[in-house]
Image (cartoon, rainbow, N blue to C red; front, side):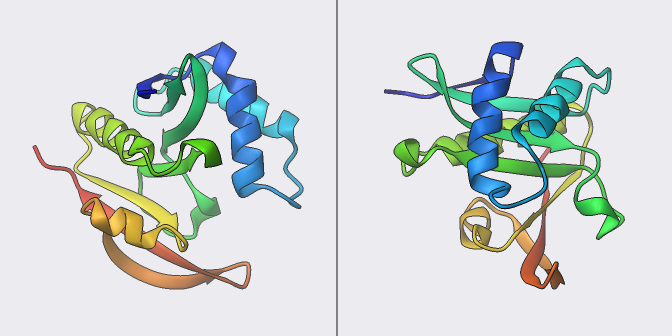
Length: 154
């Protein structure tokens, strides 16, 4: 069961949105419909930098990650962002998350990005193991958060 990393397509949107809802938006105001619409806009937009990747196992979405220009409503004035990395619980521990991160880094590098940023708390050790560095710890909605960055090798 090897994962194949590819650009997200229209058929991936709803299952990916369900993964994202379970991971990030439980109890939040954001609905499945909001996330589906946001992913659709990302896929149909004309910004060559912004992209959504999906990891497929046996043709089904097992994980996803985004590269976007804006994240967390201006908590920091930097761009672009690795955002929304999630791997379904049944597929964790197989290197899928690391492969998705590498796909975003490669796409960013191909678009001329020198530094990527992300927010996390729970996954800070995972990202550090992939070469990301801590920039700042802060609070977001009363919860701890870490701004991390990675200079992309040429």
